[in-house]
Image 1 (tube, helix red, strand yellow):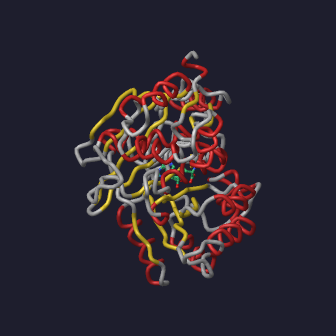
Image 2: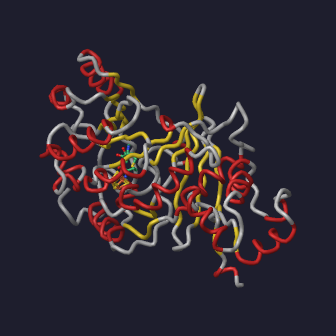
Image 3: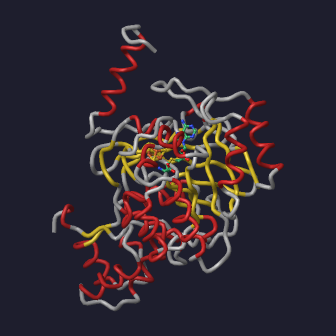
Length: 375
Ligand code: SAH
Ligand code: SF4
């Protein structure tokens, strides 16, 4: 069998791997053994799977493979942040970032090459959209990072304690592959992470949000960024299709459907003079009144195609204090890894844009720079 015809076992959910073994005339429990080799020990060579008989090892190497996406580069920041550039099957590159903090290590994972949604402050959006990542390409990012730390789930002192789908792409627009890979992150035979520490971040694709609870119980973060529809329509254009009055109840329904009590994370990117004024903070207070949540303020990270600016530290503190005084658990995200362009919203990868959006933005910026357009 040629390599192209081999079944990639990386990223196959447990029931599908069991079905695969049955389909090749083997017992289901082989899936348990192989998953442990893949995710607990980082093994990709069937020959090393010593509790499988020789015959089965040979059969597997003929018809299956464990293939992770290709690492193009890995940068280390002065503050301990690491960034991998990963090439996916479509030929585009995506980025994965590891952020160490005291007592935990968070891996920020991409779900798509580019993004179709075009939020006005996001560098991924400016590159247009190329492709959905496969489940192997999504879980493969965790696999690659875990292997680089020699990080296996049964070790107590693991480096990766949290995963957030906050890299490139809108996870809910690549539903099946994101759900399959996030369930593997939480599966004991996968990476065994706590469901409280595996978080899907969405800009608000309501129909998919309504389906999510049927398939997984990951934690949820909502990219809110504005306290009213008029401003959110500008910053997060998908709001025109799914405005706050349908989005917030859909988030609440998802959280209410979880077996345990958890808070949704509200992400709010603060942009100078756009959504960072006292009135915006005050408008958030009644909007979020009935939603058990924690608020994470993200100071805008500049990038070349955007003229937005980051607010001053004082402005950020004032915004935070209004929310704190109203009783909201509100934190400010520290910028990490900006010396290697790994900060939130700076993830650019290298997307072979199918929407021509990237060229449009580039043309606009060039015109602005050469003063042919009024700014
Ligand atoms: N598409 C998903 C997940 C990826 S974006 C979503 O929108 O939630 C992850 C987070 O980074 C989002 O909250 C997004 O709003 C934020 N972000 C994007 N660009 C940013 C920028 N330039 N500065 C700061 N945060 C940004
Ligand atoms: Fe896409 Fe999220 Fe960026 Fe919006 S913020 S363009 S949804 S990746």
